[in-house]
Image (cartoon, rainbow, N blue to C red):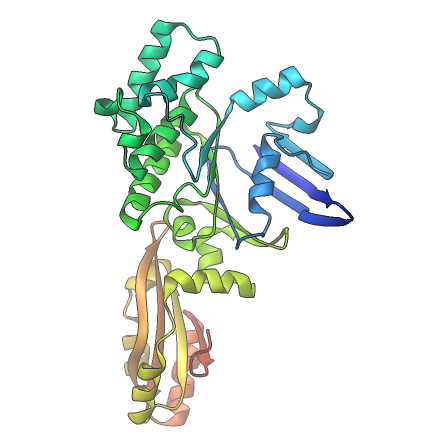
Length: 341
């Protein structure tokens, strides 16, 4: 649906050039939730602004439904923009308008009749759970309620693309979870393509189907969230994963493990249905080897289980080697040194 092909964006500031986006090629499928993650200055916000031509690419093409949007006339571009909803980090609500007035604003600009506007506003207020707040003003709302108004306003004209620019970074964890559930509901019930940028990996983990990781204006890694999360290739991606995975034990835990005679430590990765199987027990019993789970967890990701354990083995060296060899045919296993990821 949305395709970036060799897209770059360069800003000229006095005598220097800033390469905000560099040679990015991505495809976002219709009806998917696609996340773009990166630290501050990675270029993710600039990339989003290119989707609705708030910024124009220096090089490359961006197509939506097969149309090169850089070639649209001003009239055609206005129509295209009306099919792109935007949700902002700081809500961007009109403080002088009521909740209903904020949601009605884009509909008034589109020339809707008063009766149709009232019906649509009531429908959207019900959808986001704010029917009782229609006459309130933004200053009377919590942060989560303000963002719900922002989502309702973004949906007013029935867009086919919803752009979320750090939509949850100003919210507390519980409210963030509520807003993410609402965005999943938007995607599921309306089939809207959601393009989301964030610097928080748990947001990507919670709702996205696919993800692209940006650094210095480039996409350094991309793919299905489950695969990127369970097998990150780039160091920056690994740092994001570790921020939510918490798969590294503290030095105190490692010292205690060493005191008990621990020498070699192995990371074992389980993916999917095999996570429910007693693989470790079966293989170690077969080779007369004991195992000890030093650290780790099992969690759900995209409705699949993902286990990440740090374990040690006890037994004769040849038997341990035979155990590791057999496990390697079933799961991902590798030796690690202390706190290596």
